[in-house]
Image 1 (cartoon, rainbow, N blue to C red):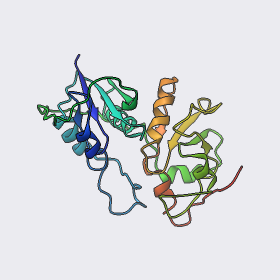
Image 2 (cartoon, one colour):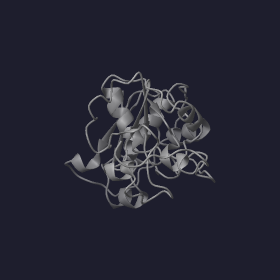
Image 3 (cartoon, rainbow, N blue to C red):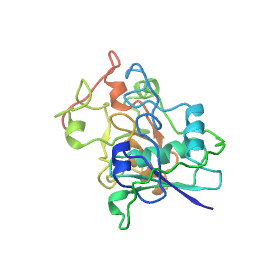
Image 4 (cartoon, rainbow, N blue to C red):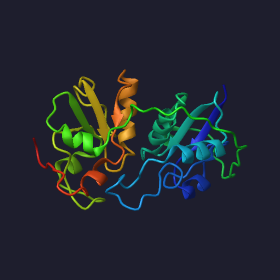
Length: 235
């Protein structure tokens, strides 16, 4: 097994200095689809399978490779991990490059492309319609990976409406999982656009809850849906 380092920071940061040998994937164009309407997929829609086959193949990822995705705490490394897991490549992890001690390189790595074959999962996502239909269902635990201020609806720097999906528990991606987060019968992770929710999903998988589902559109989709309820304040 060989290890493929995948730097998913913005291109300018990668070019300024990266771990030697790391290839680059752009978070906005490689790890997201181009969606015309955030009400249908959110601000960072999931890429289709064909796009992921091309992107991961062009990065030189083979079927026996361990992939280590690198970011600077943005959550995109976990998004890369989640996407790899989503298409059946479980040999993957994520790391914050700020913890790396060693030389950096500005050399652009041009990997040898491979044929990346997928075995997509069909049980790791949930849509807005199902969540809406199950609001108030005690067996469904929604975990909101955004900051407490955004969860409370006190501020919203990115989306047109502040607040949260009703009943959601705050689980900021920068912190350990809150008490009881692993105890729901069904677990769903969401955030603003489906990126930092992957950090929480990864924490849950590592805690033994590999049945956690991601709401890809997250709050950026939810808050744009006409008549979808929004909750604010302390429960």
